[in-house]
Image 1 (cartoon, rainbow, N blue to C red):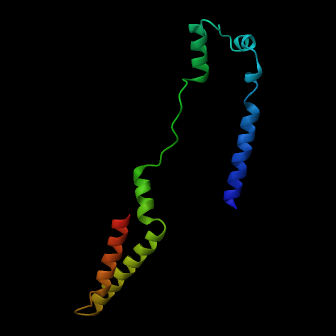
Image 2 (image 1 turned 120 degrees about the vertical axis):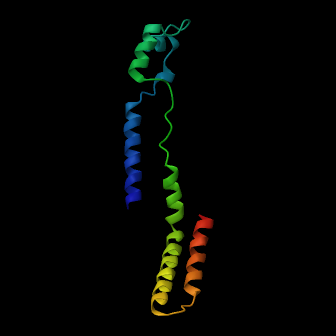
Image 3 (image 1 turned 30 degrees about the vertical axis):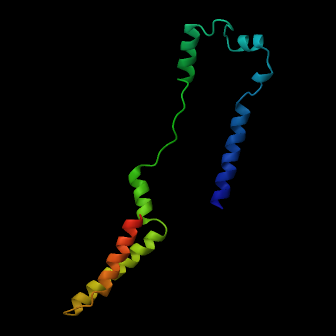
Length: 126
């Protein structure tokens, strides 16, 4: 349900943005455009007008999208999806081995080996 709500919200924002943007410039003649944007067709913008536009709108540059830090990507890979099940299995194996070691003089190493293998699989494939 949240995915649909987010999609509707984005569509609504896009519709509002379309209303704000004037897309009629392609229908205007060159003279009308030069008057509208206060530009000389042979010389371009004056330095003062260019400075005004730069101060008003900022530089004509694309801003990169926000990036996800590498440590977050690493943690998602190491603990996300099926990996978390393997980690839980490894922890349970280590706990079982610890309980066996506390109760027996010579515990079987099966749980220890299985826990190490499960943890190794997650680390190697992650």
